[in-house]
Image 1 (spheres, one colour):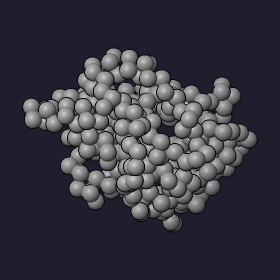
Image 2 (cartoon, helix red, strand yellow; image 1 turned 135 degrees about the vertical axis):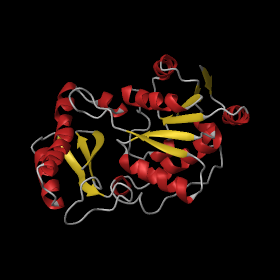
Image 3 (cartoon, one colour; image 1 turned 45 degrees about the vertical axis):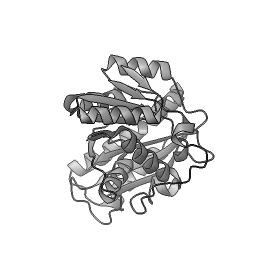
Length: 281
């Protein structure tokens, strides 16, 4: 495995690999890797000749009061995990190389990015689409793997790729969960033992909704009300949103759902830790 920190070096390597007929798979990450990330690597490895994992804590997707400065950066452990997983190249650029002095160009998706995360984190998706567009131009992957846990991010990236004619296939991998049901996330390491127990209500609320749908409930207001009530029983957990949306457009669904064409998405604060999760209904 080789670690590359230079944008120009990564671009040159990608060009060489493509000229050799190698199929490149990219797994974009912000590091602090866990089994969820490694499951994406496994999916990439199944259909790529060369797997590239990017590790970059992207400052442009963090708001001014968010956790950019304290976001975990265990690079040595991440590199060891990548090597053990069979990654061929890790692209770990410096901020100054990705956003040099005078940088002023951003990519903005103006519809799917607006609700949910976009409403509570207004600049978030501008940073996400910008850095992913840059990674696609630098690594030049044939396909890129993203996790379903970030459902709105997946929808936004799909739209960006279609609208801007990126020749990149987007592969979506299922959410990986801990044995207790908590969706795997780098931010889980912020949780104390007590907070982690409280956070389990997120996946329980999603299971409640899927159980209700399986039993025949289709009314959006009832599904949201039951999930919200369940979360509300936990004093450390504060709801940011509970919504049922179209998985492609992120538009809120009114009235009744059509099974398989809706996703319940939840964002909460567990004390000071912000967590998201979702489940297809």
